[in-house]
Length: 127
Image (cartoon, rainbow, N blue to C red; front, side):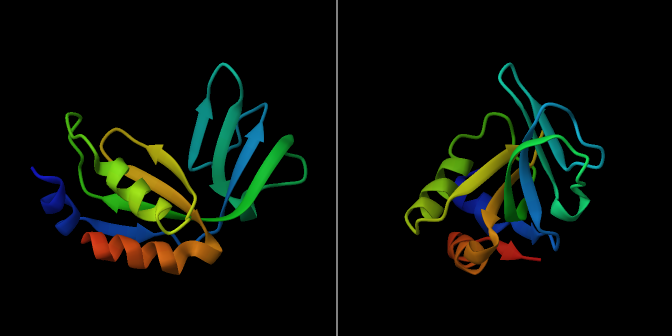
């Protein structure tokens, strides 16, 4: 399937929650995503679920989560490259999370409208 066809069949979901991206030394229950690598633990979580007791090393707040509701084959090349370039051209920073067959990006809340408009220009439908 061509990238243009994928974008034209792609429905995006914008989560209602505001998310935080947290650098910590532990996992946090109820997180959307937890990434543990050799250098750090990163948690993406609804920021209303961050408690004072959570050992936060650093935190970035007020991110909105956008999910691309299209199954992406493993041999697909360039899907995120098109998205990241389109948003970079508008000076919109993103944080990317890829699941087995679905991609997600986080954009700052104050950039959401601009990002959504750019994704619509690529062919994505907001749902």
